[in-house]
Length: 258
Ligand SMILES: Nc1ncnc2c1ncn2[C@@H]1O[C@H](COP(=O)(O)OP(=O)(O)OP(=O)(O)O)[C@@H](O)[C@H]1O
Ligand SMILES: [Mg+2]
Image (cartoon, rainbow, N blue to C red; front, side, top):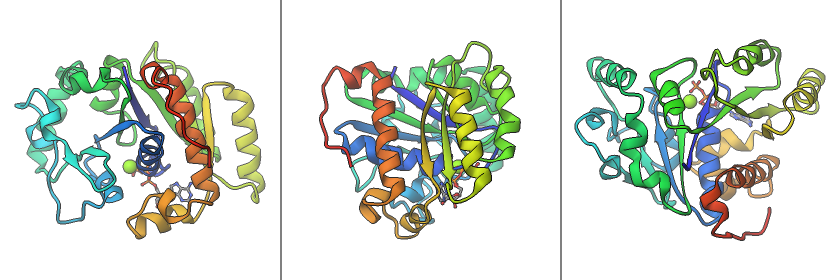
């Protein structure tokens, strides 16, 4: 199944930013890319040119519509979105309790998208435990934990490795975000994590001001600063992600590295 989720026990580590820019990178590699936002902050859409006034989303209709392809919102980049949408508290609670009772529904409702050759679905999760995180386990998603190169991320690592966060039996992958080699602590923690995590570490992303600047200009990192360290890192990450997905591999997509 071509479903990849980005989650973290801690907030503000870059899940939404990386989901969006990985989507752009995978699109550049020639794939059909769908992104789905499970966070009530509804911020993923901002990376795809959907403004603050755009309240459309899948959550309000997620229960009654059993094929979520009908709820896809197109974007100028060609990436298709399932934004969370603007919802009332009652709608959010109803969605969460439905998802808690039916964690298998995500895979069913994304249905054919998950088995379509050359299609990848990226899910942006809220921080911490959530019904959507449980649903990712039920969907057998490739689950990626986003860490920062700091001591707080080190302190949550045993929970992730021990299965307390994503659930027992899940084999997590990792991304270390906001690595700053000019800072000793950041550099030392990144090196430590690299040794500790081994091959499930999909890659590192430098701390790079081009990332927030790109969002402020409503552009992907590849349009805003194609020669930046972050663009190079995210392109490399996308290639690592696509190697994990058999149906992307079998179609032999070729694109020059940045
Ligand atoms: N590699 C990076 N370099 C510089 N800034 C970054 C980088 N990655 C993310 N940021 C910035 O960090 C902030 C948090 O990013 P983001 O909102 O993507 O985190 P999040 O994990 O989705 O947060 P939340 O837990 O609230 O959903 C944003 O201002 C973003 O621009
Ligand atoms: Mg987020």
